[in-house]
Image (cartoon, rainbow, N blue to C red):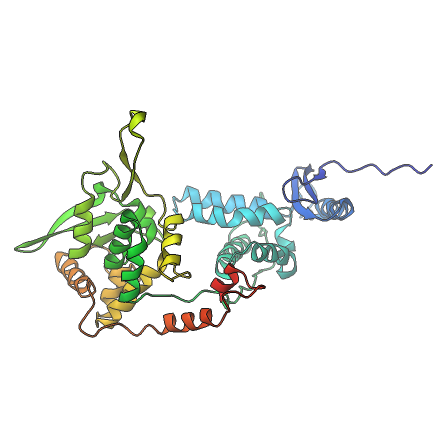
Length: 407
């Protein structure tokens, strides 16, 4: 009777994703990969990896250590550790982007990185619904790692670069990127009719400051500074620490116009630390005291219900920021002032704000606090998107709600 071949250690069924996975050590190198349809595929891959480890590196001369190829997992770890040592705030973002890539193709050596070997990762991310822009961010990290391995990193005890031949993965096109969707004044009024009070306040604040939703959700009273911009006028500005600013290069100043100031003043006394909160009621018989709790995210169930009720199924919270940009342009605000308001990076921008700059930004924001004499702005993107959605039959049996939104 034929005997069954002995299975290699480190190959096990994948209870999470299905199929088979590899997680083992061989000669001090970790080999890890998942997504194999059957045991034989995993075994063949592991055999090839072991052969590559055996053959990796050549002796420079007798008595020296072999130059062992660096795996993607080792390279990513080194890359993140160096960024952390330098105190770069972007290390958290890069770790988040690299984690799914390392989980899938961590055992590949840098010499094996190419478009073909990275293709399964790209396909898996697309299948998971990740947009090309987010995938490109991860690929950019990978390209940066390979550049460092070729230009900066050296094998231990050697002058040879970790990666002998320069390598770069082509980035994906952004044809799947969703265009901005600013709202009109009439759409704003309709949306606010359906938003709960706490989200309406946050949305109104966003539409009068142009800041990102994470800043609105994280806004703290300790950041507030009272600034006298005119002899008879004092306003609130918030000095936002750089860890809450996109790019995290430096702190930014959030300036309130008169509408945003009213919103801020209405929030005072509700929470000791955070500006924007929601009221959490309790049962009268519980003996507990009702209180205000910080809002974690604006894009919650209440926001999604409100936009659907308002007929704005495709509206994102970030579109409020696009709306501010559109209204500033419509009001004739200079591009430099727009960049100051929206925190766009420019080399010629100053790193600190004088009172004159704060006054300039305040006056610009005052121009968009209400609908101007010119009436509605011509929102071509919104018109096009409404036409696209209207072209999809509402009751078509083969078209899902998600597909209608994608249209």
